[in-house]
Length: 183
Image (cartoon, rainbow, N blue to C red; front, side, top):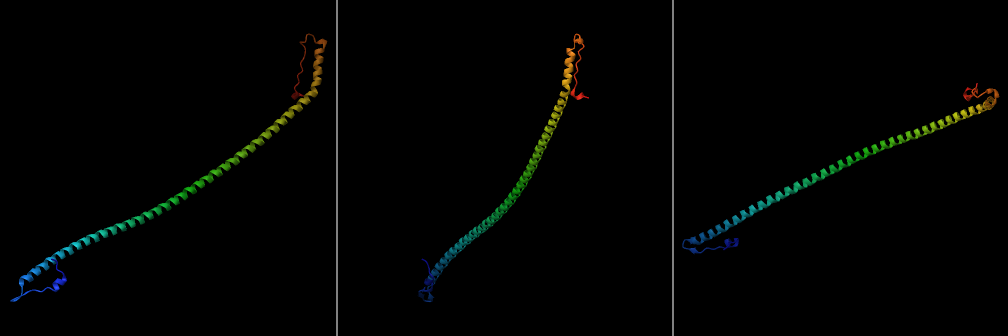
């Protein structure tokens, strides 16, 4: 039987000659003591369970804190990595743009040199053609001058070969006069 505080407050003992019945009082005190012992044990086991729950709760709170710190650190690292990647990408892009600019400039310079060389070759060709025309005209002019003298020479050659005094033709003289040696 369970003893409640009301039972204790209203408990009455039978009277005997010398006062209260000691056996009843002793039985009641033993029941109260047993009940109190059980309550203390229950209380102690509940305190132990509560302490374990609080430890688990603290452990979970610590884990939660560690996770929060890990997430914060991971976020910071991700931000740092992103910033580093952006910085590196900007450097790579700037380097590529600079190299592209150098290549473009070199290509333009090369193209200018090629155009200059083509123009120089055209000028040289024109000069060569002009020199060749001048040389051809000089030779034509020499030939024309030579023709002025050649008909007379040609007539003289005919007279030598028609000459009856010439004999067998061994004495025929060939008069090849070069237009260059017309003096």
